[in-house]
Amino acid sequence: MNTSSHTIQTLSSEWNSKGLLYANDVNEMVEFGETLGWENWKGLEPSDQRDHLADQILSLLKQANKNGDTECFRNLFPPAHAPFIKIFEKLGQSIEDMCFIKDNMIAFIIGTSYQKREAYSLSERSVEKLPEYIVSIGKSHKNEIFAIADAEKITTYNGWFGNIISEFPLPEVKKLPISKLIFFNDGLSVLLVSSEGIYLLSAKGNSMIHPVSGNEEEFISTIDMEHAALSCDNKLIVVGDQCSEHRILDQNGCEVAEIGPQCSYPHFALFSNDGKQVVLNSCHLYNGISIGVSTKDIYGLKIEAYSEDDRFIVIDEDCRVYAALTTSSYYIFGDAGGYIKAFDKEGKKLWRYYLGSTITGMTISEDEKTLWVGSCTGIIHKLLLNRGKRDSHTIGNGNHFEEFRMIFWKNEPQPLIW
Figure (cartoon, rainbow, N blue to C red):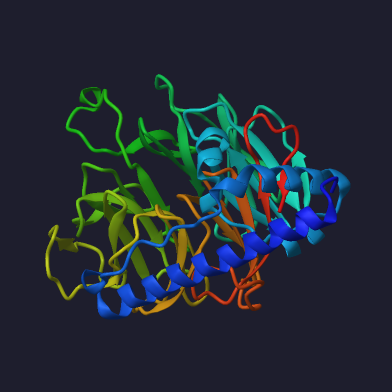
């Protein structure tokens, strides 16, 4: 770092003292709201008083990356979100389609479905740009099957860029921006989620399984908040959008159950790792409700919207879920407010951990010890779960160690490690 040692120590002292105060204030407020009710909180909203330091800190971060002393920088300046919000608004970009490959290696996409996307792999702290033709990627629940989409087709592979299993031409619609690829454990069928409909692709051809219309020609507009999920055994599918119910389908795309939203708009869905429960999230503005429904007797099930019904349990009453995953024993939700939160299948809150801004992607290692989280800020966070907090600036009660965060901002020649 070219800045004098005295100046750096002065900056570090101010950064740390104000960061500690802000983290403590936020944690105190959230703990109060969760235990005693937000309606009883009479205090002021905590404010991070470090905005004026952001440009200097960013300049030092870039210099540390150039000099290869990011660990030293990290010790002096623990990461923060709030001071850089104006920078995120200009330079941030969405991290999506995150999938675990092996060891400490993941793949991901930068950009939303409506943008020109770029695909990368991240191994430890080494980043590799993937072929430019890739517009979406995904991984099966089992059997290490990967799928890659280009502008014309989806290809499934046995292993990461292994032997080709099958190829699926894209449905012939106007634009087909791919929101998500979800595919079956044998690589022979694919769920394609798009704002122009949700499709089931197989050797038999392509069929739009959502939305449903008496005459498919009537469906000429796009859908919003489109989402789908596939059970780990591939026997059940859930689909939905802002204007629909949560529709449960069998593996052939035929509807078997219908579950109404318990908040304004259906927004996200997820199956438990053992397939015994499906979690359905509906939202309103930045908040939402997630319910859990047993799949044991789901055939023929119909639950009305906004109902009190003992056939579901409430998992969470706060999160508008944008990304989520299931481990062997609990769920992790990534919400619109920048938190990741863990819940068990009965709705017990296990922990929360703040990263900042809408969470847009997550993936976890096979041993469930390492979690990678991406957000719309253009940042990937690598967390070692249950390894202890790294510093006193942590917002949340999750006992996790952030090994690093990698920043992919627009117009930056190289990602920055913090």
